[in-house]
Amino acid sequence: MRPALRSLAARAFERVAGTAEDLRKEEIRRRYGLPADFGIGDATHIYGPGRVESGPGSYIGAYGMVLAAEGRLVRIGANTAISHFVAIYTENRDPRADLSKGKALVSGDVVVGDHCWIGIGALLLQGTTIGDHAVVGAHSVVHGRVPERAIVAGAPLRYVGWKAPSEGGRS
Image (cartoon, rainbow, N blue to C red):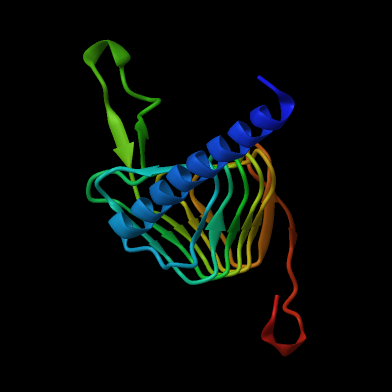
């Protein structure tokens, strides 16, 4: 194939693939009733029969994974930035269970406050609540409560600082 035709074919394929990805994201927004401005990165999957809610101006980056299990809620606050490769699970296997007796599950809601930043590759597990203006470092594993304005990182999770309120009410 001549270079000009190959380039034309590549551009046409990108347009069709981009359209399909946009339609998939719109279907996710419609299914969960998410705001039109909720950003969904490429190849991010949001699935499950539970509820997913978001405030305005928030997004989840590319290759994210959100599982909203039956009867559970994932809530993402307003103006919250969730980076690429972040996983949010409201249900998981119980690590304390005797696996020879079958699959035992634990579940809980995941709530992320307003104006938060969740770093690349973080894992938010069932029963997690992250307070407003909190920061979760890259590749952290979060299970439990993170207070408002806390800066946490690691696995196991450690507190590494606090965000001071800034003037004018902005963080």
